[in-house]
Length: 260
Image (cartoon, rainbow, N blue to C red; front, side, top):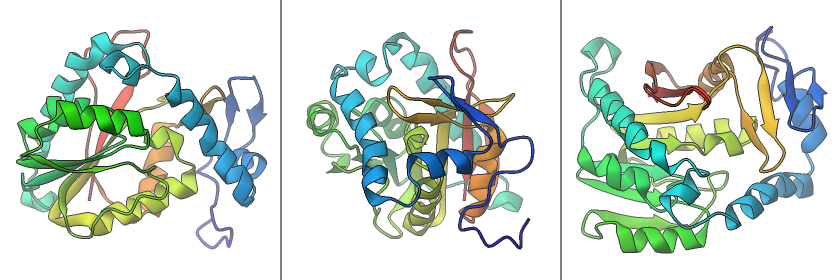
C-alpha cells in the first residue's frame, strides 16, 4: 500500500467504514472526502462554513464552548495538567521533556484551556481561534502580560510562527479539519516548535469502529488508529498517550496524544 500513488490513501484495513448522522454509510474516509469535497474549492469552503454557522449560535461562555457540558471543565483541565506533568518527565530516550516557555492554544474559544491549564505550566501563551466574539472575550479574561498574541483565524489556513513554541495544544478542534488539512496543519505545527517542543492533541475518539460525521456542524470523530495513521503521514512521532479520566459515562472517550 505504501507504493500507491493516490495523494491521500485510505486508512488501514478495518478502519475504512464510517457513517454520518443522517445514516449515510461510507466504505472509506476517502469516499467521504470525495463525496463532500472532491477537489472542489467551493465545496471545501462549504464544508467549513457549516461549522462556522454552528459556532456562531453558541453562547460566549464556558458552557457555550463546551457544547452545554461546562460542568466537565474542571475534570478536563485536571486531566490535561496530569498529561503535561507526564510530558515533563519524558525520558531522554523519547527526546526528553519540553521546555516551559511558551504554549499555543489552538481553537482556544474564550481561553478556557489557556487560563485553566497552560498558564499553570508555561510562562507565556498565545491563542488562535476562528470566532471573533470568542477572541474578544478571551482578551478580557486572560492575563495580557502573559498572553501576547490573539489570532482570529481558522486552523486550516493558520500558519504559526516558526520556532516559537514549546507546546502547541490542539483540543476539540481537529475534528473540524479534513484529513488533508489536518495533516498539513500538523506539518506547519512541526516547524513552529522549538527544539524540545511538542504538539498535544486532545480529542474525542472512536475506540471500537469507524469514523462518525455529525452533519449539524460537519465534525468528524475519528478512530484512535485513524489519528495514529494521520500522525505518521504528517511525519510526527507519538511519544505518549493517555485517556482522559473521570468523564461522565455518556460522553465519548477522549484521548490525549503527545507528538514531536
